[in-house]
Amino acid sequence: MLSLHFLAAALAALHSFTPAHAHPGGGTITQSPPAQRTPTHRDLAKRAAAATTYETTSPLPLTDYNYPFSAIPYQVNPYAIGRGPQAGYNICNSTTEGATSECQTMEVNSAADFCLWGSPTPDGQIGDVEAAVVAYCTQAGHGTRIITPGSITAVQFMKTSAYIQITGLFDQGGIGLMANDTGGELDPHGADLLGNPIGGLVYSTGMPSGDGKTLQQVTSWNNFVGSGQFCIKLCDPTITSPNYCLNSYDLIGCAYNMPAAYTPGEFTSCEGELQDVVGVYTTDGTTTTWSMPASLSPTTTLPWQPRIPASSNCVTYSSAQLFSASISGAAPASASSSASVTPSVSVSTSVSSGTPLTIATVTTAPATGSASGTGSTSTASATSTGASGGAANGAAGLAPASGLAVLAVAAVAALL
Image (cartoon, rainbow, N blue to C red):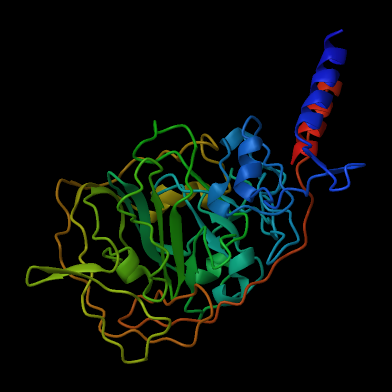
């Protein structure tokens, strides 16, 4: 029968991979020493490529995980290794939505429909909770916490050929942060590559390479929150160079990482030119790359001022037009698409020029990780970046395999 033939073939394969060596005395045969190379996490992930589950016993770098929105696991990182497991979960729906949601899957779709990472506990500080931050969204329908209505006092959505970006001003208590927290950066890296938050996933219907309605996973992004200012950028998966989502300039905040107007009371959605790569600037015809030191003194003056990219086709809204759904508690028309709003007033064909943003000094405190200042004033300050991991809530289960599949997996495992 086929199963018997399969078993015989598997056993034969096992024996063929067990070399034998003659004993010097010639009387016995011993097995060769076991292979010294242990399969890497990436090896194991590749072997599981036929499935949507990454069958490993320890976490991969967060950016190595790719899931269709319909195949998101309960937790990306359920492993009690290093800073893990992740504190929250990734499958988020109407049963998880509300003030105590621990959802760590966010969407960034439009000026009306986006999320930010915020504190899981009241009056949190990013430096203390960065590993466990949860998603706060402007609209209901994502299974997350809702940004407190009225908290956001300015927004600019910018769509370019390489990324989308949302910048603005807010009362940061609306995402659980202490009023005086100078904040920091969240990104899918961190020193251990597990990300901040650990296991955090980001999706969007608004990417340049997308179709405008399908949620697309984004693995290159960064988000600054603090000092009453926020900014978040998602880089298109099809464009990897230059990298507009660098996470190596965390001490200089929104003003340099995502230069924009940050105008109080202004709510716009625009198309825009590409910004300069962070840290790269030109003076008198000479292009220089600035490398950020481990710390900056209180009186540090950076050698350049960031250029605000030109924007066009800007549509102006009122706050109520963008966020009325969150105020009323109603969900957007679709959980997988942007909320629909009608602009009230102006459409401009050219807004902003390359006007430099003036930030004279950067003030920091000793930092141990990725926190930074994101103040809307001319100074920014860093905080320490202690990380905390939460208790695991369980991992996604696997469907039972057939007898032949189990035999095949066992045969492959025996070969490792």
